[in-house]
Length: 331
Image (cartoon, rainbow, N blue to C red; front, side):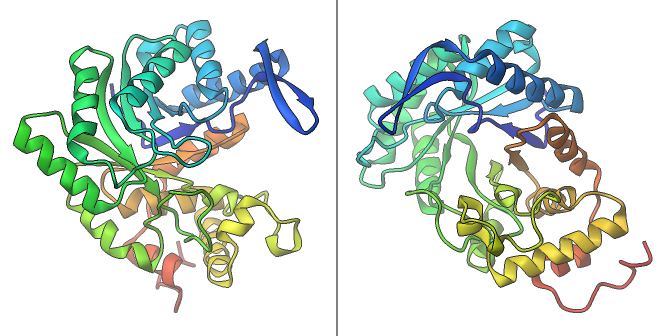
C-alpha cells in the first residue's frame, strides 16, 4: 500500500472517560462518546484527504484504543498503514528495551488496535546501555511470528542506528526500515521531553546529510513545530500564556522564519502550514511528515502541502533569511 507523505499523529487522541480525584485522572471503562465522535471526524477527514498512514504509540494514553475502535467501525484496516511505538521508559525513566518489555508492549498494542499484524513498529526511546544485538533479536522474533511487518526506531542517535544496521546485516536479520526524529523549519529552543532528539536547525545539518544518503524512511515528528506555523496562532506567542510549543520553539530566529513562511504563503496562495510542511517534505527525499491535526479542516490542509513546490532558493531563504529570492513576489 502506498504510504502518504503526510502522516496523521494521534498523541492527542484520548477518548477515554476520565474521572478527576484530587488532581489525579482515573480512566473509567468505555469511551466518552463526544470525544470519540470528534476523533472519528478527524480520522474520516484524513482518509478523505488521502492519508493512508496513522502514527500512534503505546505511551499515548488512549490513542491506540480510539484508533482501533475507528478501524473496526469503518472497516478500513486494509486502507491504513499502522505505525505504533513501544519500549518507552518507565515512570522513573527506567529503560524498557528487554525482550520481555518489547513483547508486552507489542502485544498490548496489537490488542488495543485490534489487529493481528502491525505495519511498522518503532522503539519509542533508546537506552544506550543496552546492546543493539538483543534488541534486534527480540524484534526479529515478532517479525518471524507475523506480528510486525517492518521495524524501526524513534529518537535514536545516528551512531546507534548505524550499529544496529551493521549488526543486522552481519547476522542476516531484518534491519530497520524507518527512523523517527523531530524535524521542522523551526529548531528547538529547549528539549520538550526526556530522551527526545531533533535534527532541525544548524546543529542537525550533519545528521540530515547522513539521512539523505540512507534507504531509511524518515518520520519527522512535530513537523509543524507544535502549531508554531499555524495561521491560527497569534503573531507573537510570547504574549500568550506559556505553552509547550512556545517553550520549545519560540525564539527571535524562529519568529523570523515564520514571518518568511507567511510571506511566501501569501505569494503562493496557500497556508503558512502548507509552506512549512512543504519545506520538511523537500528536506529529505524519504521524509514523511507527522502532523497532529486536531480538526478535520486542519487534517485536509496539511495533506495539501504535498502539492506545494518550493525552489531550492526559496527553501534556503525560508531557513536562513537574507535577500528575498528573485521571482518570489512575481510568482
